[in-house]
Amino acid sequence: MKMRHVTIHTAKLEESVKFYEEIAGLKIQAELRGKGPHDIVFLANDEGETCVELLEDPDGAYGGDGLSIGFEAEDTAAYREELITKGMEVTPLISPNPQVTFFFTKDPNGVEIQFI
Image (cartoon, rainbow, N blue to C red; front, side):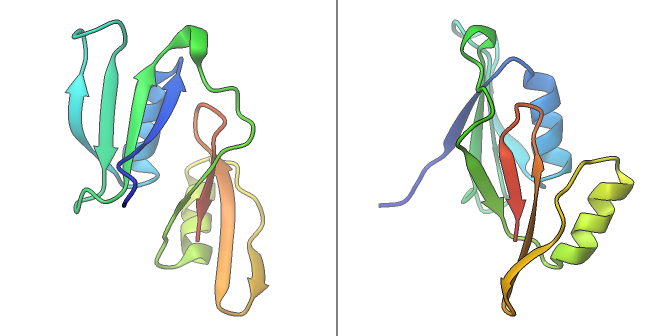
């Protein structure tokens, strides 16, 4: 079995779409705007393997605790510096062993985003 997508309920749909496009490198795969009680946007990588569903739901929006989503970065140190120049708040680099380096930032909903 493989995971199809992660759903994030958001009060900030447009900001969230922009974040996942510009920061996580995902592209809109499907949009369900005006077709139900909530607007929904699915974003994924080119292979469709990494999928985030953003569901506009101001009353049930994610509160920011207990969720972390990890994305692979080719060069974590360089990508961290790039995000800093874009004005993003990022954690220091973390390296629990010589083969692994990562850092965190947050999406517009407060979801912890890890680049590893």
